Image (cartoon, rainbow, N blue to C red; front, side, top):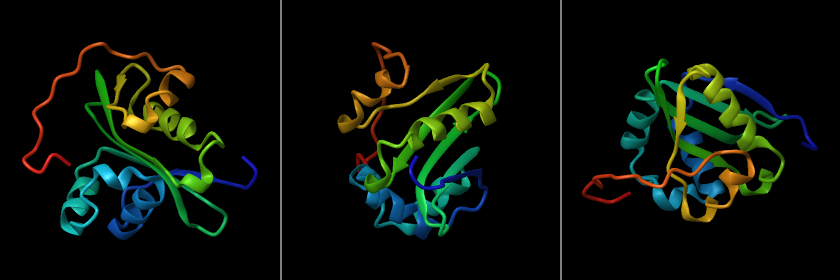
Length: 139
């Protein structure tokens, strides 16, 4: 990484900061960024939130996960500001989430269409079967 990035586990990321990085990462296309109350609920319900901040303290990356700390960890959000992508921030966010949740847990995520080629590149295995019930608003 060309500039210093600071990674941390943060319990209280502000919804406005989270929304801003979602927008700068393109993940906002699949998240309810116009519903601040829902975003706040998403953040408060997470078990692990790992952040990446630049030298000025700007949130440039975030990973949000739900885990039982024993068997599985669902990485529900991985967002990196597009201007910071390609510098290993996403890989480090994933590593830190997995480390915090427990390396003996299975890390699971649903890839955004644009990120399909990213995850194999960093050593993740594709699962051939995933089933879901979509919420009413399908976001």
